[in-house]
Amino acid sequence: VRRTVEFVAERIGSNCVKHVKATLLQEQLVTQRQEGGDPAGQLLEILCSQLCPHGAQALTQGREFCQKKPPEETPAAVLSSAENAVGLATEKACTWLSANITALTRREVKAAVGRMLRAQGPEPAVRGDRRGCSRACEHHAPLPSHLISEIKDLLSVAVGPRDPEEGVSPEHLEQLLGQLGQTLRCRHFLCPPAEQHLAKCSVELASLLVADQIPVLGPPTHHRLERGQARRLLHMLLSLWKDDFQVPVPLQLLLSPRNVGLLADTRPREWDLLLFLLRELVEKGLMGRKEIDACLDSLREAQWPEDFAEELARL
Picture 1: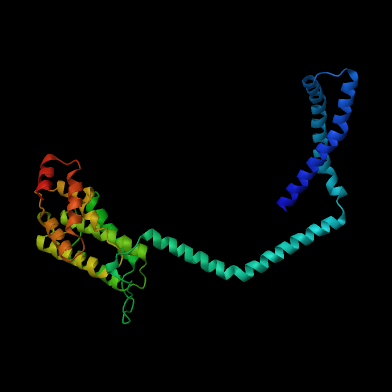
Picture 2 (picture 1 turned 90 degrees about the vertical axis):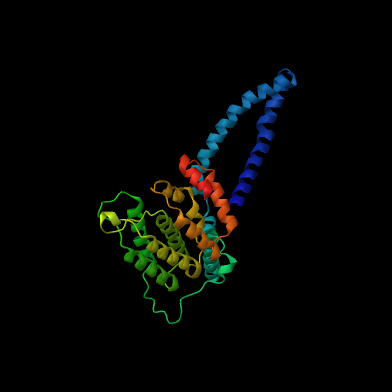
């Protein structure tokens, strides 16, 4: 329809130009030649000055005519043809959609899923195909959303301002990691984005354990985890990272400036848990030595207090 309208408008415009040339312009030329035969340039200026006002007036009159007359002058046959054309176009569109709507929906769904998977990035080849929960699973594991909320609450208590009586017991930490393992093994309600969120939260929790930043309930003199308790919790996390997570775990965050910087605030500084964790990561094949060395080199380039930079250089 658009092309038809453009074609008709172009033909009308062309016919108008031909009409102007054959009538008004020709008459003006004859008149000017009879009156004195001015040079060509001056003749052109005179013609333009006489014709342009007539053209502007004709354009205004033509626009008014098109607005007022077509509804009155359009034959009933033309209106009927327009209705028939709209009806045929609608019927054809609906017929095509009814025949192709299923295929279109499938294609769009597949495209949306593909975009989501590409956004998550490829999984390491060593992970193999994603596993589901066992046939004997009764799907009674805690919901991922509940665990994410629990771990976030724990992280907020550890890093944010808190009351003296706020804290967590070592038993609760072990119970929380046990529930995380249950959820990762029962994958009935677990989707990749939730699993990625849990993986990141688990790394943040490990960083707080290494820096001894987890507030423990109990007497004021025992507000820190014992080293044996911390190692046991780190062992549980290592096992989850190696055996249960099926998405890439961002272990590089363990050596991010923010997480390693937590050690800068501790007195006395103790690096044994971090060294223990790094050795276990290498032995279990979760990180390579070169990868760890690259992270440490990047850390040493950052700005640190002088004493902390010296300890980091000896690490």
